[in-house]
Length: 361
Ligand code: MAN
Image 1 (tube, rainbow, N blue to C red):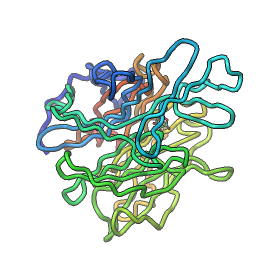
Image 2 (image 1 turned 180 degrees about the vertical axis):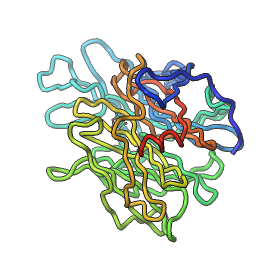
Image 3 (image 1 turned 90 degrees about the vertical axis):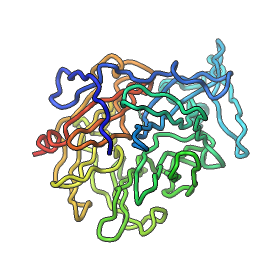
């Protein structure tokens, strides 16, 4: 991997580990063109990250909605043929619940307040990003993506990039997969894990002859939002599912947890950066260490977060108190974590992998 020039960083007040980029936020909604003139980008968030031909690529999640008119709230959805439809609700409607900025709840049905697509940007230094001359825009397609696609992880396996992302529709939330080797032509592999599931991170090499992934089903009544492990002979058909980490009531990861991107192979085990949230939707980052030979064995787990919302761009925004990652770049001991802050802007922070490992002891 090529060495990317280091950004200037700043350390969080209560953290020994995260060195935030001084340039944060490195991308904001104003820096990207909406997908059509009648749409507004409300949020840029949760990018997948990878290296390709000496550059760093981010696959941004771009969340848009139509220009809002006073007195109404509108939400965009695709129909199965791929045309955009706009649903409109009156603010004075007593059946309307807008208490969560991410959702529009009406008469027992929940819609998303924005619709997301994925957009590719490149960088030579990991800090300044630009769109390619021919933009790569990946939109939801078909009946499983009518509410859009979100939070893409990028894994490099056997010389090919595999994108695992959240497919959202009235049918539920599941994991889709695409692959490419040139970032021009994409091959779709369809839904690889059915609803309700998201946060799917592929291991970048086989273990004992099988591919592995982390994923996050959501239990109904029993169970919860826990991290699971599965294996596969071909990256498409997944089995041997097992729950490897549950939420810890009362702690920073008490209500929901989910994998970041691909586990990092270290001498001590697979290091996975994951998000944990409280019932108040405060999202922090922590780490899990999994056995190299049997990743269903959890060797260690962060007692306290390795990074938590504290800068203004993390505590305030479209949905405040959120640090959410699904993309990082590893360069020796240096780990650059790209993340969505307050569900509105893109930021980055550097860590030392060995320091994270030491914090787990
Ligand atoms: C969800 C995720 C993210 C989002 C967080 C915080 O759990 O899927 O898309 O960033 O909530 O809103």
